[in-house]
Amino acid sequence: MALPKFLQPYLPSYDITKLDKDAPSVSNEIITQVLNLGDDKAVRWVFDNYTLEEIRNAVKNPQRGVWNEESLNYWSQVLKIEKIENYDQAILNMNPV
Image 1: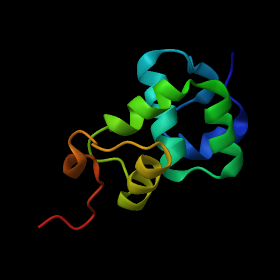
Image 2: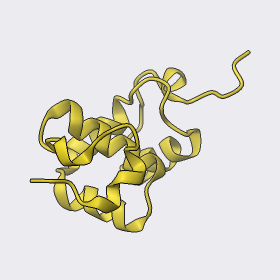
Image 3: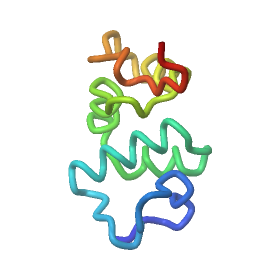
Image 4: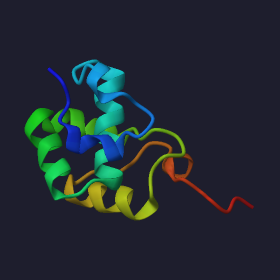
């Protein structure tokens, strides 16, 4: 099943016509990018197409260096995640010291 075109802005490095939304690495990337950057329509799509467990796992075990701090904090509160693994490494830091 092809991804909807409205997700393309959140996955600019990918040809979404060739992505398998159910492949674990792809689903994690889609969930991460949409929760991090997506609008209401894209976020609704994620919650309609992935299980709460998959979504919580993407937030609880975030990819390194891709999350906006505000987004990760927001979704951890919404999803009631108390501990995020490797939180500091997950945050995209545009001004490293």
